[in-house]
Image (cartoon, rainbow, N blue to C red; front, side, top):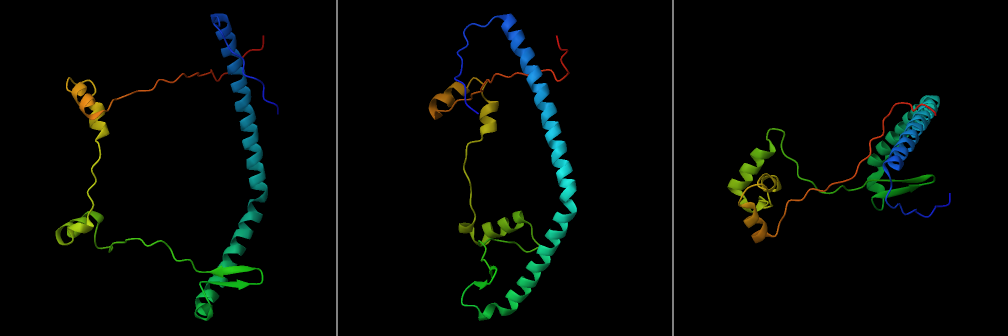
Length: 171
């Protein structure tokens, strides 16, 4: 589909705005109808193939289980972490190290113990309290904070259009 050059709009009238809104509402309505039609088609296709997809997923899971059991049993005989078979490769990946805690403790309790016995293993994070800064924006001292710390509170304003969802009468 070829792209049209964007037209420059100069000083539209109220009548042109009404006409544009009417056209937008109609396009929006037609788009919603088409999207609903597409979604219905997708649902029909999903339903049509759902039994076959489920069966294939179950077959795949069974074969993976067989390969994993065999891999765990035979892995010591491999040269590395993977093994090539005629139709593919199986193997074991070493995950990224992670810290876990005993089920008997909560993370705050672990943090408390680390702070007491191994303080070098506890992080403290210093960051601006943005919510507090926003709350102070109308305060007298905010001008001083803004000037000294080179911060400001801004709010963007964006244009919006909300077309009416009802069917438009054809004229």
